[in-house]
Length: 352
Image (cartoon, rainbow, N blue to C red; front, side, top):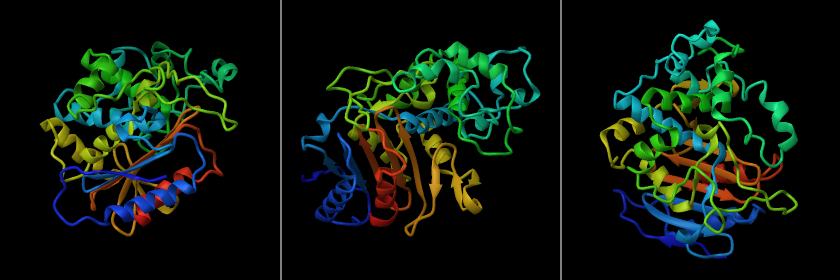
């Protein structure tokens, strides 16, 4: 299989590698990953290179489910709304969602910043999510847990830790953030994201609801059995985005410091989401921005986020110091023994 190059206006400075070297690196990485529908997409100072399973043109590639890699979109939306003066990071979610509703003191203290940075003290999912999800765990676990139930679960929650004191990854928290932004602006989350982020960035092929193949990729179990499209129920802000490789590179390229943002609010938002906010990981060696994991590398910090749905896998990452971005996706959820995430992370941090 050969990689495809796509010339775009180049940023200032020489390219890191020539096109042939980049194509070879993508092909070598692809050989280590055994998954259907694999796509590796690289932007190096706005010059794009793709490796696609089965060949074809990047513009003809389907949309993939981003899963948790949707969260950078929600974080960018929050930052843009803050920059526009429509909300503040320190606004309390419960007061925006249900003014005057009695809540636990720790819930009352949870801010929008706590929700997006996974420091709210909320669990990964509501306690009552699992009994209703287990009968549909491998096909549609979120589908019967709607938005109003997510909000009710938040208002009656008892956080495990005082907000702002510990990091704990939470789909629940980011979903609450989406509903809170909708309540604060009087605009549905999907409309808000489209108006403030997707539209201005020109991500016209990106969707927030599933569509039929071939426009949308079909996910698979490990044995190759196809799976239905993901229904996120009341958790869209945590995992509902669907996008094709070119749109994902456009999204990542917009995060690079030399990029020109289409609006003043987005210009301020990109600065905010690149800035490290807290330390986490072994020895607190890794930092976290408003919405990206941020790890050191030999050529400067790497910002990234992975995602998985029932039958698809995603990795998004960029290096602000070198103008490099990588999007990788496949149509099968990988497991701990699979090299997908490790291979793509190493490609971005060590090879490019």
